[in-house]
Length: 224
Image (cartoon, rainbow, N blue to C red):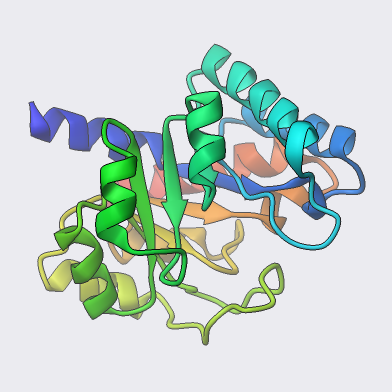
């Protein structure tokens, strides 16, 4: 049964769209882009509502509820970024945290029955996350990214290779600077999926961008 759950999660994390209203011109533009991304084949969505001009309070909650509804309708995994109370309030599928977002043992207890994803920049961070019950690892940043002001130095696909060669067997998602042009390299290195922000949110046609990414990922998986 555990193997079946893992396999399902690997599939659900194939094309992982991460975004918040700050990544778009307006909240409604954000929601429109999300709908197009869903039509284009994203398999998971992370609501990352952080930074200048982000939604807060009731407006944030209302947007999260809209997202959950449309994700449920299309069988898209819905993850909340670093906001335990919001995750609980909307009954999201899980929570994703970084290395500075709190103590993992406490977070794991608070997310019992939900998915927990943890960002890792090194093998040691990935191993620690797994010890504390992470269901999947967001490995990176793989490439240079401009969407996070506090992003660490890119580590390349070599991080994914290193994690796999050191028996990190939980689902892995490559994060940071991934585009249609380089997504195949991340999957080839051993990742189960890729997480993107601007490759979809900044595209002139988010639906087409999602379709292209999805096909790139699936084609590369078939070659492995």
